[in-house]
Image (cartoon, rainbow over all chains, first blue to last red; front, side, top):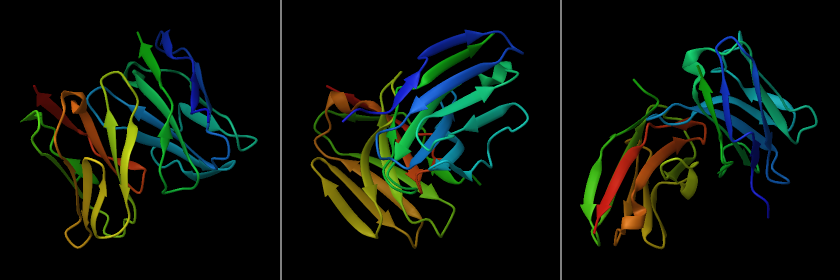
Length: 113
Length: 106
C-alpha cells in the first residue's frame, strides 16, 4: 500500500514570495491534515479536512495561508506572501477518519531567506 | 497552560533498561491518544494508540492511560540504541506535545 506522498521535498524561497505544497493521502483515507513543524517543536495542526470539507482551521494564518482539497483526495497548501518565520517542515498526514491513527508523509522542508 | 505537555528531556537510559515517557493534557473530554516516534530529519511514525483507561501492550511498548489524572505514558522495555529518537504524544490526533528526546546508550 502506497504511503502519503508529498512534493516538493525541499524548497528555498525569498520572503514575500509565494509557495505551494502538494499532498496525496493514502488511498481511501477520508481525513487529511496539514501540520507545521518548527525545529525543536511538535507538529502544529494548520488544517484538517474530512473529504473535501474543512473540519478545523483554527490555527491556520488565513491572511497568508490557504489550503484546498477540491475532490476529496489530494490537497495543496499555499503560502502567500512568505515570511521568515514560515521556515519549517510542512507535514501532511491522513487517516481513515478523524481521531484515528494518522500516517505522515515525508514532509516538505521550507526555508525562507 | 499548553494543551499537551511533555518533558523535553533529553532522557538518557542504558541499553536494556526501561524508558518511561510521560504526557499530560488539558482537555478533559479528549478521547484518543497516540504516541509517535520521530527520528532526526524524518517524519513522525505511529507507535501506539490508546483509547480507554489502563494499559495497552505491543511488543516492547506499553501505553498507559489515566483519564481521571489526564495522563498518558509510554514504557519502552529492553531499550535499544535504535530507540533513540524524539517521542511525540498526540491527543485526539491533532494536538501534539513538543516531544521528549530519548537517548539509549550502548
